[in-house]
Image (cartoon, rainbow, N blue to C red; front, side):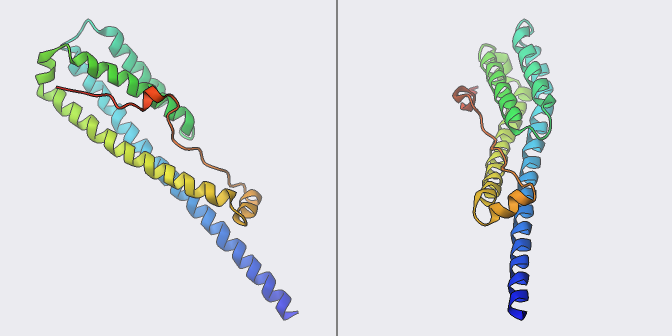
Amino acid sequence: MFITLAIIAAIALYVVFIYNGLVKARQMKEEAWSGIDVQLKRRADLIPNLIETVKGYAAHEKSTFEEVIAMRNRAQAVPAGDVEGRAQAEGLLSQALGKLFALAEAYPDLKANTNFLELQRSLETIEGELQMSRRYYNGAARDLNVKVESFPSNLVASQFGFAKAPYFEIDNPADRAVPTVKF
């Protein structure tokens, strides 16, 4: 009788241990997503200033400005938990920003503008931090996914509704290219 109770207690403790590991992995994934969200917000907040600076030099390039603004608004409209949708929208925004920076090549005065250069440096810094946040998120998602799929934690995960987390990926290879900016 005592041995049976000890075995049941050991199994219960093991289930609790696995459950707590799954909760920790899910929280790490959510915290990592929050880091991406913060960096995306910083980038989105910088875009209007960048547009206004470029507009002063290239006012007739209205379609490029409208495209960047539309892609920014589209990215911000994606629901908070939609990782794949957000990745796709952010990829389109990156393409539009690349066009904006390519446009700047045609305007030497703009390339020399200190405000534009500062905004460009800020955007480069944010892009670097965003890349680190994406890697951290994908690592946290990987850790959660391993726990959700591995035996015996998959038994506990399925019983308590833990699910695999999507990776923050960009589908279109052209979206993966970092816009080159030369001034």
